[in-house]
Image (cartoon, rainbow, N blue to C red):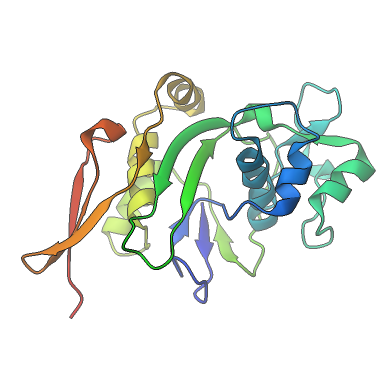
Length: 221
């Protein structure tokens, strides 16, 4: 997970998964990848993880194994992922991503996002390094430990991230998490948000596949 910069426009200072928006360049790069569901989103997920955490889910063209850490281009020295791939003969491993969740910001929010979540086994040997701009810290952390950090007040975790951590915590290891993602249906989640009895209530449908359907927070004074 990465910790967002305190000046970020969204979830400032929060502990989040690497991510961002789908750029036009992601659509272009997707034309060079084998067809797959939500391919531009997959490309964006790989690119953003590389930019924010230095992890690149890619392989040499035609190879079966993912890149070693010594082969990964530095995102702070090579800003254009497509060019970096072409120069080195690399291809994105979009097939290694498993779709995990789909969240849509409530209609009442001024800034809205339509977010696809993917999971993958990290390439062995690659090191996570924060970019120092959007992210100030990278850490490998078990889902349950991240929740404990938030409950102890040592980390800020937003509602969708919290629920997806709880969902990940059902699995004992990476292989089980990937197997669950392959088998379990992904339901689009668009929470309802409202105030009730001095509390902020966030509610999601029971069909979303999370044990929790509602969370309540004290309203800020």
